[in-house]
Image (cartoon, rainbow, N blue to C red; front, side, top):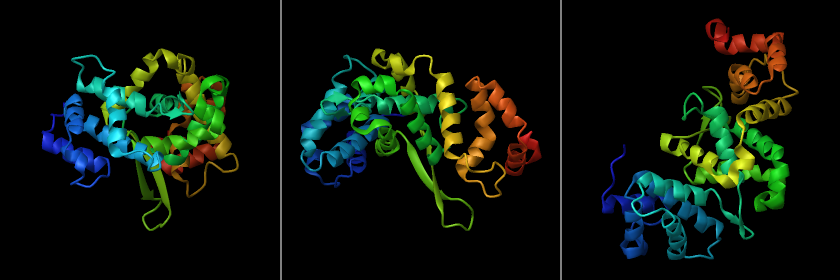
Length: 296
């Protein structure tokens, strides 16, 4: 349990996450004080609100003032019933921030990709780092596979098609839902690869809210098997020209060498996993990456 912040600490955190000056005039307004009170002065809620405000200001292209954007964010807290917990307030804001309006209608693609990511990659631990390339190719395949539903009424899909999924990591990273880090591929390499993870179990828990949302049922119902299959499909399509036993595998290849058989089993791809485990190139690559003790 994270203790609430003082009003002064809450204002400082909100301004920091909003990328506003410490002496910004909004710091002394009643609208901000009331909003922070509605957030129960909880740091996760305040951090998310600040990130959301910063994102909305950026996407508005300077057409909206800070007060106007904060008022819009405050509307999300009013959707919770009186006496709601700080968790209810946070999830209400996450619902709105992850369902932005596009051409007058809310998109479901961001919530769809988040739910799929948690379901497929976060079963063992909510904070498992996933290679950025794996996540982006996976989101592309998930959205592609759900195109029949999304093409009917999702405005982001109508305007961008399956490529709309490419916006998801950037949006969730800006909101602080995803933590995106860069690191060298080897100790002396200048080449950088990125990974995505979820830093908080509370943020991870929002996935349950998505599965309970009636509006999302066509997209998330009975989804675990097909989403695991989407990962396998996305990886094999992206890496079809590469050998499993490459001596310098990237992070997406390393993840597949370790986890692909498990995802295939969860996708009920039993013939495929049997073929994979008989593939000499895969066996060599797995042993070279994980060594004998972990690779068997």
